[in-house]
Image (cartoon, rainbow, N blue to C red; front, side):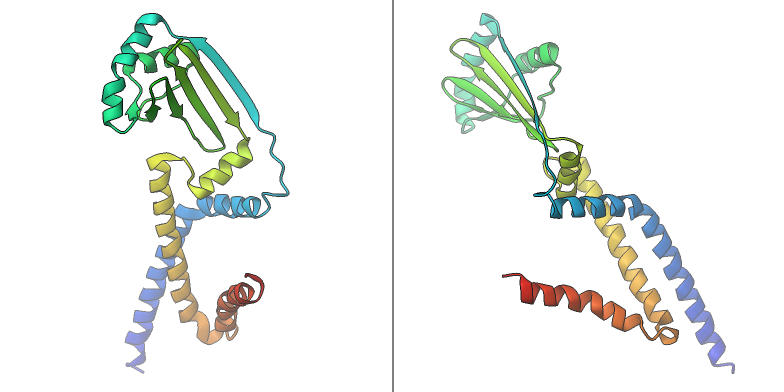
Length: 214
């Protein structure tokens, strides 16, 4: 009788600890799990869900002093294998005229033009400046909020902050799953269907992959 009491106390301690880690990790990753579950469904049926992209086009002409200043920077850009950020003067021009931020992005410099790709979740954009005549063009394609959420799921063009969120979410989901597995183990003695159900979660995707994926 006395030998079983420490075992019961130890079991109660670990069960309480596992439950605490389980609910805390589930609270952290709850909204993320809903988001990734919904977007997993939409990505799986991307061919059946039609998206109507909206395209925005802008054009203008930069002044001669700015164009001349850009041409002087061409040798330095070539030294960087044609990749260099937009000069602060051109960034200011784009921000002032079109309210478009271009900081922190490298553009492709050639002898006759500067081309800047501006990919983002849910769409794409680009900026092109012709050095010969100063003509500048901007085009943005917006594929809608569903495409935006799908790109969040894939981490496509989302930046460092969202990448950190995915890593933290993945860690919380891993803690949630592992603590859930240990809780199942501790209750498995009174629930005979526990391990068959866990086994099905492994066997079913393996069989589907072996039989239907080629």
